Image (cartoon, rainbow, N blue to C red; front, top):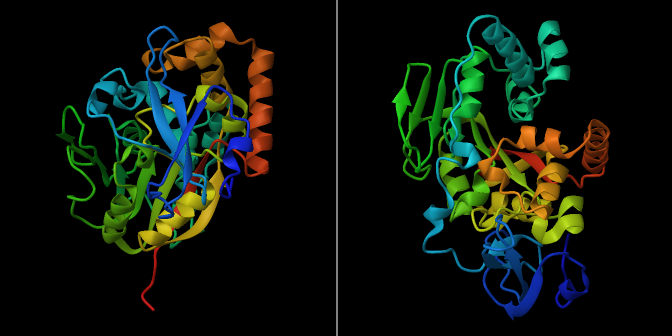
Length: 347
């Protein structure tokens, strides 16, 4: 969405309250406004939820929090989904999981393909263009991967189960650093980290970073020659935002400091010295599940979302959610996408 000056108030956004204009600088495109501000609800029940002011850039449409709360850390915790650990699968389940995960990341192998159809893994699928030769060289399982904002390391653990052996995750809020040789989890910020990596991922983490341009610039400095940065984020220029507004499941105020548009993310990447070479919409039925749960006052970050979905929505409704998500992706209007960046070559 591109919001020319003075036009934003004409757009109907449910479950938000419009407030006065502000002239803050947009983190994505550096435009100074004026921008319309919106008061949006947090993810708690109506009786005890907080509301947070965001502004929508009048140039690129990126939604960003007006003032970062002093107590931001209190909105996280070990119940937050990215901080939940996962056990390593063993035996037959470990074999099956490894086959599925290897196919998800590499896109090869008939047994894994069959398993993936029944049991998809979009977080790993985002890696395929950076591994199979579509972006940069074809890479094997020795590829050096860094996951920024790794949380408990679930993405990297799944890659380890698939046979990848050079994995690092960093997160400034990591509870317990670890190192088993193939997988290191470090309490660190990307602007302080050192090393060289072939693939760097920001899997739903860049929207949590106070200075995302500095984070991308730091990541660019960690790229080995031919390396790729993958940024996977929720998007406000999506049908889900237009339908649900303040009850959109990926709004996640105030933890999501920024909710980018495609135009805004491209501007941010350019400002960090990166070239955007590919965009891949990969939204799914979860955008409807989480939003509908929010409308019911469910604190979905504290529950098993799959169980809640199964208990709340009949199978035919889940199937309809999947069809609608596929249509939104095909139209470039999904509520999340992966952006593939390379370091800009010196002129």
